[in-house]
Image 1 (spheres, rainbow over the protein chains, first blue to last red):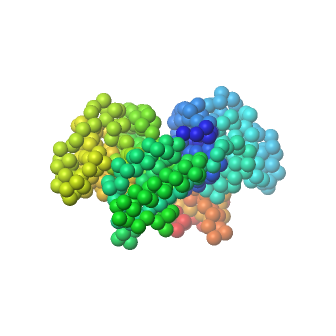
Image 2: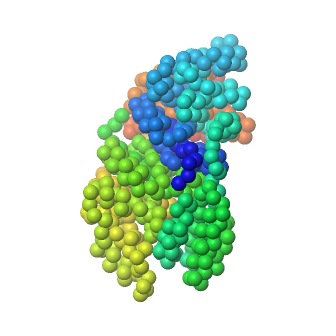
Image 3: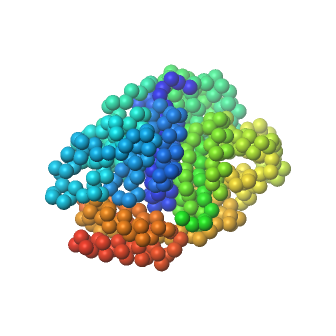
Amino acid sequence: MTANPSACVVIIGNEVLSGRTQDVNVNYLAKRLGELGMPLREVRIIPDVAETIITTINEVRARFDHVFTTGGIGPTHDDITSECIAADFGVPCEPEPTVWARMAAHYPPGGFNVARQRMATMPRGAVIIDNGHIAPGYSIGNVHVMAGVPAIMQLMFETLATTLQGGLPVVSRSVHATGVREGEIAEGLTGIQARYPAMDLGSYPYFRDGVSGVAIVAKGTDLAAAEAAIAEVTALFETLGAAPVAGEPG
Amino acid sequence: MTANPSACVVIIGNEVLSGRTQDVNVNYLAKRLGELGMPLREVRIIPDVAETIITTINEVRARFDHVFTTGGIGPTHDDITSECIAADFGVPCEPEPTVWARMAAHYPPGGFNVARQRMATMPRGAVIIDNGHIAPGYSIGNVHVMAGVPAIMQLMFETLATTLQGGLPVVSRSVHATGVREGEIAEGLTGIQARYPAMDLGSYPYFRDGVSGVAIVAKGTDLAAAEAAIAEVTALFETLGAAPVAGEPG
């Protein structure tokens, strides 16, 4: 719909696929990428399996302007993201001098062991995302490699974000009405969507405390268009005798 | 690692990609599919774009034994999952007689409008997931099509689950130790993983209330192997002077 650059997120880790961990990285990145004008277009959640990682990254880095990965850059046997990304780019995975020196100085004698040395080993050409964290993420080409732990991922992303060239921020306006059902407004909504083709009009039923209704959200890069579309939705709600309220249900 | 059937989940909906909605369907399905012995191997989160839905479903239904979709089967303009899946299977999308008759009887005169009729329109050959809900999900081939609203998705899935042929349930055992860092146990853990190749050994650092440590989880279909692997991890923690505790940190 817009010329904004596109983003894809790849969550690498068995813990999300096994149900051990409720992922929260997608939601954080989705919001922030929208704000940066680099809307999230697709997410893959894949296991710690080298062939799957290599194939997935090669596919999505060709299809999207930016790829953000989380997970698999720690010191343990299942942390294989860096080797896989090196394979994708056809480069060696080798010590990154700045990180290696920093980590060697950080640990007590013997502490910078073989396992930790893997965290200082990156695809040749990687540019580290340097926020002072002892084991940083990095970018190579259009692939940005971050940790899986949410607090660390967020620090890495915010450092990275200052260097990314986004587009127009995605903005939204919304309205909701209790007692309305999607099936009653669907046809009217189709007409409104057709009049605002650059807007993404979403319809979301809600059920809370025994009360049901529908919230409509207009998203796009044109605030005036979002406001105009939501004004039409508000009028549509009113034709049904409902009492629309601006925003989403609280 | 096992002969268990594989599962893929496809979340269809702009609301997760825009950050409006924190997805919880993946976590629910991940846990339940593991219990059913049909482990979740990959997740795709894709927008309400016909070409993307068609391409994605055709790819994953060839790669995995079962595909579970959520979202896009309501009455509004952005609910296009059924047309896309019909295209994938090369069949018409047409009124499903049982659902059509039920919905026609359910609504007051005029209430079963064009928008709601779309919810009774499915790919030819679809087998409805019938739990009495007015607008059901359905299966076609190895693709199982469910609603996006979590409460409704869960009802559909549990009805569907009684008909699925799973494999050996995935079980897990775990141990954690405060004060230990991943980098100290990574080499020992690599050796343990090598001795239990059918187990999936995961390492998860934690940080809570100012305390940090590592939890190790062994997952697989062989409980005795999971217990033996975790016994070795417990011994590894003890060699570091730590006090390992069974289970994950509460």
